[in-house]
Image (cartoon, rainbow, N blue to C red; front, side, top):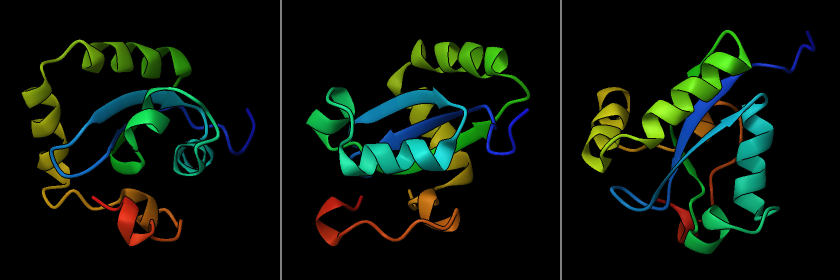
Length: 108
């Protein structure tokens, strides 16, 4: 297995209690950078969903994808509760992983 490969499910937000996006990746930092710089057209770029507010590591991509599907089917309030259990301030967890802070116009 490649050293950078770490299956993960994550939630990004446009703001505190704002638009949420649930995704899956094998390289979280790279994916968050893509959300931040708008590399991909689509939902997260359209709605400015750039702030990493929750993530969960998984042993395999199969497990991560199953968890992503489970969370995507949840009610919005359940997702908010999931975030607030470990991140009640809706901090940008990407900063704790070594990424620079988002510009103030992009912060939650």
